[in-house]
Length: 258
Ligand SMILES: C=C(O[C@@H]1C=C(C(=O)O)C=C[C@H]1O)C(=O)O
Image: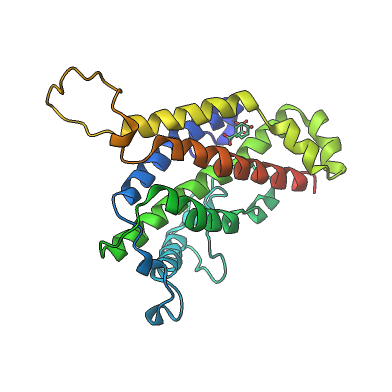
C-alpha cells in the first residue's frame, strides 16, 4: 500500500489511508447517483455472450488493469481473477510486508452481490436515461474503490498481529474465528467511521454556489438537497464495508502462521 506501506506500517498510518479512501468512496457513489438505475445495463445480452454490459465492462477493464500491473498490489483484487493477462510493463515491486498467502484472501464475490442487490437500489432512482456505457464505467469505479478499501484489511490485520502476536497466535492456532473477530474489533473506531462518512456525504453532496443563499450557513443544507442520502453512506459502512473488512482481517490472520 503506497502511503502506509514499507517500514512505516503502523495502525495509525493504515487508518489514515482508510480515512482518505472514504473521500473516493463517497465521490464514486455521488457520480453513479447522477444516473438512474438503468436496468438494461444489467440484463444478459447476446453481444456479451449472455453477460450483461456491466459484467462485460468489468471483465474487459480488469484485463486492461492487469496488463498495466494494477493487481500486483495485494489490496487491488480483481472480481474476475480467472485468465487475467500478466503485466506487460515492468512493475516496481513493493516491500513484502504481508504474508505470501495474503493473495488468496478475497471477499469480492460478497462485494459484487452486495453492490448490485443491496446498495445500488438504495442510492439510485428508478429509471432509464440511456447512458449505459457511463453506468458501466461508474459501477466499475464504485466496485473497485469499495473493494480496495475492504482489502486494505490485510494490512490492518498484519499490523494488529505484529503489535500483539502473543494475543493473536493462540487464537490462530485454534482457528478460533469468533475470538479473532472480537479481538480485532474496535467499536469506538467504527462509530467514528460511520459518523465521518455520513458527514462527508452531506458535505461533498452539496451544490456549491457563489450566491449568498439567504443566510444559509455552510454545511447546513438539508439531506433532501444532497446528491446521495448521507444515511446510505453510514449504512454502507455499518452493514457491509466494515464487516467485510473484518472478514478480510480474520481470513488473513487464519493464514498468518502457515
Ligand atoms: C479497520 C480496522 O478494524 C476494524 C474495522 C474497522 C473498519 O472497517 O473501519 C474499524 C475498526 C475495527 O473494528 C481498524 O481497527 O482500524
